[in-house]
Length: 56
Ligand SMILES: [Zn+2]
Image (cartoon, rainbow, N blue to C red):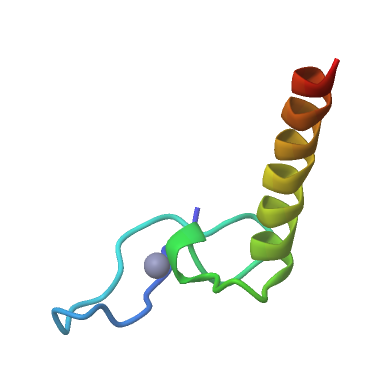
Protein backbone atom coordinates (compact mmCIF):
# COMPACT_ATOMS: atom_id res chain seq x y z
CA UNK A 1 0.00 0.00 0.00
CA UNK A 2 1.25 3.50 -0.80
CA UNK A 3 2.01 6.04 1.89
CA UNK A 4 0.30 9.40 2.21
CA UNK A 5 3.42 11.57 1.90
CA UNK A 6 1.69 14.80 2.92
CA UNK A 7 3.88 17.32 4.74
CA UNK A 8 3.25 17.30 8.48
CA UNK A 9 3.34 20.25 10.87
CA UNK A 10 6.74 19.00 12.05
CA UNK A 11 8.05 19.34 8.49
CA UNK A 12 8.34 15.61 7.80
CA UNK A 13 6.41 13.31 5.52
CA UNK A 14 3.23 11.56 6.66
CA UNK A 15 3.91 7.83 7.01
CA UNK A 16 0.26 6.73 7.24
CA UNK A 17 -1.17 4.40 4.63
CA UNK A 18 -3.46 6.00 2.06
CA UNK A 19 -7.16 5.27 1.83
CA UNK A 20 -7.80 2.95 -1.11
CA UNK A 21 -8.79 4.96 -4.19
CA UNK A 22 -7.37 8.22 -2.84
CA UNK A 23 -3.87 9.75 -2.70
CA UNK A 24 -4.03 10.60 1.00
CA UNK A 25 -4.50 9.01 4.44
CA UNK A 26 -7.70 9.60 6.48
CA UNK A 27 -6.01 12.42 8.44
CA UNK A 28 -5.04 14.33 5.29
CA UNK A 29 -8.17 13.68 3.25
CA UNK A 30 -9.85 16.89 4.41
CA UNK A 31 -13.54 17.30 5.26
CA UNK A 32 -14.63 17.97 1.65
CA UNK A 33 -13.11 14.83 0.13
CA UNK A 34 -15.28 11.88 -0.85
CA UNK A 35 -13.87 9.98 2.10
CA UNK A 36 -14.53 12.82 4.55
CA UNK A 37 -18.09 13.29 3.29
CA UNK A 38 -18.80 9.57 3.60
CA UNK A 39 -17.48 9.58 7.16
CA UNK A 40 -19.65 12.56 8.09
CA UNK A 41 -22.76 11.00 6.54
CA UNK A 42 -22.16 7.83 8.51
CA UNK A 43 -21.85 9.79 11.75
CA UNK A 44 -25.02 11.73 11.02
CA UNK A 45 -26.92 8.54 10.21
CA UNK A 46 -25.83 7.01 13.51
CA UNK A 47 -26.81 10.14 15.42
CA UNK A 48 -30.25 10.07 13.79
CA UNK A 49 -30.81 6.44 14.74
CA UNK A 50 -29.94 7.24 18.34
CA UNK A 51 -32.39 10.14 18.37
CA UNK A 52 -35.19 7.92 17.06
CA UNK A 53 -34.53 5.34 19.74
CA UNK A 54 -34.68 7.98 22.46
CA UNK A 55 -38.02 9.29 21.25
CA UNK A 56 -39.59 5.84 21.34
ZN1 LIG B 1 -1.36 11.70 5.77
